[in-house]
Image 1 (cartoon, helix red, strand yellow):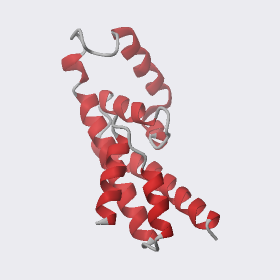
Image 2 (image 1 turned 90 degrees about the vertical axis):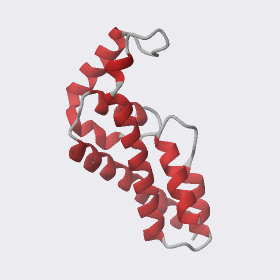
Image 3 (image 1 turned 120 degrees about the vertical axis):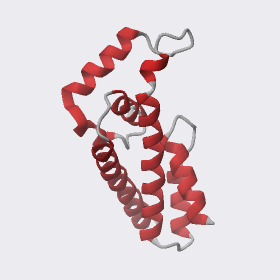
Image 4 (image 1 turned 135 degrees about the vertical axis):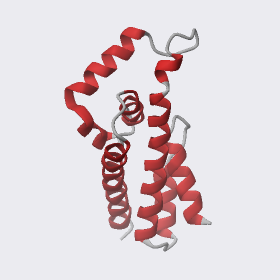
Length: 141
């Protein structure tokens, strides 16, 4: 049940929902759960949550002229220009607490091929959770 909770929290944390998987991850480490499985489920959940952002991004053009849409055409174009400056590789930074979710959304808008999207986002998220685990283990020793 702990791994499922971590997966769901990590998933939610990658979307626009307010969730902080690092707190749960740290707590589970101190309870003696397998570091490998904690890393795996957190990385998988967070990566799949970013895929949801990518799917939403791919739907943006359908909704951008609605009154409720949160971005102007100018803001959307600026985001596209910034993303194109660094390209798909910027998805490696999808783990960042500020701006990471937006990067994965823009990755969807830019229609980055799914395989590239998942691999790049997954690498970034995996490295992030490995660092969090390392910090928690070394802080508690």
